[in-house]
Image: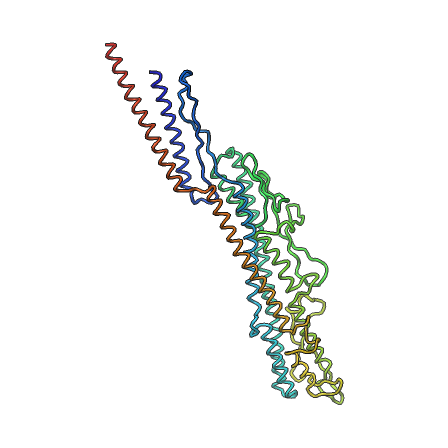
Length: 479
């Protein structure tokens, strides 16, 4: 009789364990699409069986085991930070590329072409008021084209600053969440699959923003370091980062350099070379200054604007409006604030109150030529004089080199973005294969446990029947 009760207890315990296993499977299926969730498995072990010692075996659960692979997670984080960098670079460069017209029909090259045509028409009839006014109008177009391009690039730079500020705030929010989750995980002894899913999902969000190194602790919490050095999260302690700007000495009016500061206000920009923040920093501190300038570099667009203005002004001021007597010297066509080399393109304008009649068409060296200065200006369209060139290029060609450089960078960034997106998808897919929930596998396991449950239940039914029969026999014998 005792053996029957022992068998009944063993079967009952089996039902309990199988029910736990079915519950784990049900939870897996429910969370199959939950970000960060991985397959959980109830670990089973056999109880000792030794009839001589009244050990009748059975099964028991030894806890729930997570299938999470930290190496697969790290691969996703690494691919994610590279993807964040390249996608930000691609989006920013494609936006910048749109303001540079390479067809020559609009923007700065189109305005320069119109001005050269106006110079040519004016050189054919220097005293014609209509031709003179056409030059003034075309020159205004050049100044406006430079100013518009400058302001558009400057707006993109400002948008990047806003993106940086938003991304830094977002990173701080995520790291605060990680610190909170670390505390909850410690309270739950690190066995809560839901908390672990939230933790790993939040870490993945951070990895898209910046390069991080994650060290998983024995209690299930995560230590997160920015660039492998600067602490972001240690246990339940979170350290904020911030966005700052530093104005270097050099070109007056130059845009300051963006930098990332740790919780103590110390610069850690060099650590942020990947992720969305890294991509935005590189674009903001390198690509834009190459065009608009910084403390040490006037920028290619400003260099071109100043060179064009200075060359045209030089020809006009060395010429004469009238030979007199007395002779009337020419006046400059363009003006820009002195001492601000990084703002020439944005502030280029016509000389105040200049009129067509003030244009100096006459050249005096080596001899007086009535349309000499005007002809020299018209020749800038197809220059042979090195004074009409910039770095060996005509002014239109030099603008083309700026546009081409931006275009090449945009093409490279788009290619890198496509490659890194593929690598991220591959890493995510591999992680899913290693530790993700397979509905087919779960269905197979569920069927096995259901059959085991039915078998254990049948054993209980059989033991119950045997027990009742035995009790009836004993009652009959005793009566």
